[in-house]
Image 1: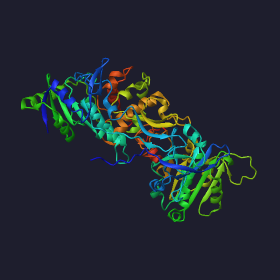
Image 2: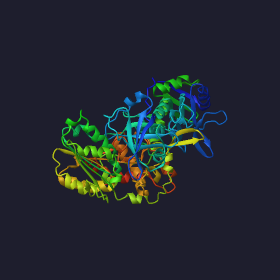
Image 3: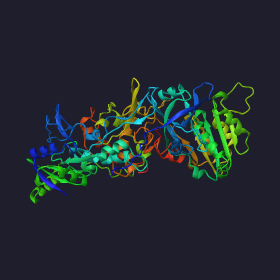
Image 4: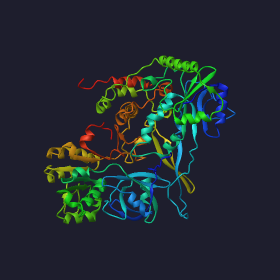
Length: 284
Length: 350
């Protein structure tokens, strides 16, 4: 008897609904997509921390973290750094253009373990996308009571390089989330938040690891120097959660290029705890 | 299950008679090397070979395959929408496949067909294939199937098995698929006890001819990170020129790339075999490359086959002992020696 096989390589057709230029260097844009077939939205059911392949006919695919939260209905968003062939082409596309999204792919942040705990979110640069998804998800009135304190350290090179500036300002005003926005440096006399690298600000602001889980996303150098800070405060490696990036093609653990030891970043990750990573070859 | 005996001429005639029900692939000698080709009156099959230079993996998993197509013509209503390419999966039979190469498909299977994801193209072509093996009377000096779960007459992954008894073939059905194939094959006669006994004796003596034995028993217990940091990788990789021959010839190497190709307004999304030997395989868009150095790539190939696969699937090593990489490596890197190094590696605390 022939098996009914769902094709995991087939993207859902989507239309670019809105494009927002996020950073002053215009290298980061947020793309909001609407599914051409409304029933595909249900099939694309995701959890914060997952990613998808943005698929452009004639160019190829690029794996990008999902920046919207599943609580935001009717569309899905991705913030994309202009780097290679696919992302450069995407940056030149316009609202109304048709392309594809394939996913959701990968695991997600450990939401079951995070429930009932304090959550510390540490992000740097353009790696804030799935962290934005997580913050919006947790702040949703239906979810907020499932988590204790939420603290966020988010840094960029300068104020113009921060993503989601309007939302950051809005979260600053709320009392159910502790925001610690920082920039490496600025000559703006009106800058009202922190100045300093993410590890330094983390050391100043995150003073307790009690009943807490930390999610860390950022450039390798930031992760490297934030890790000891968190360990000093008392976060065990099991409670430091990282999301990795790798070159990918299939996104489903078959094409063979994104492995670290026997784990595939696309399928078994991209989210790993520091404890897991310590048992994997350091090849990433 | 059916057990029949054919003269060699009768067998080739029987295969020709099956062409309306199957696409039949047989070993053919071309330019000094054997290769699997569609059965054709002009070129008769040649079952007198040790093994084909290329493994028959491309018959299930083509080296280059169109997956999707699309139009970029903005006037078309379906512009930029990616659609699955129409394909037929007519039953096919690989006749004369060596047991190691049939075993290799079983080793590869969990990559393409697992509880989380199913690769529709690999699975459909695998399921439409009948594997009719040919036992190895005279294994080559580079063969080591008996060390990795196989043998010259192993039935693993086969639907039927041929025994070359000189002037005749004894053929045994092993699965329903094989039974169906043999039931449609004309001619031959039922095998008698003497013939069956001759087949068994042949299989037993062939196994004894494989002199090269390697140990894989301790690989599972090794600590991955320590094996990764073992001191021998620089020596192992020293001569390697990263040509990728081993990965293309290997029946258990499955890595691939996906590329878009466009001609005017029509485009295809294509899958091509890829190789962990090439630095571009893992190069990030940012310029960072986790396996930028040759030694890292060589280590990846052997760690994948002999450790990561072992840890992930609990299905033995990712090697069927065909020996192609040993025979064809331009700098004489021998997986058997590296397997011994890995299996015999002592941890820090040992």
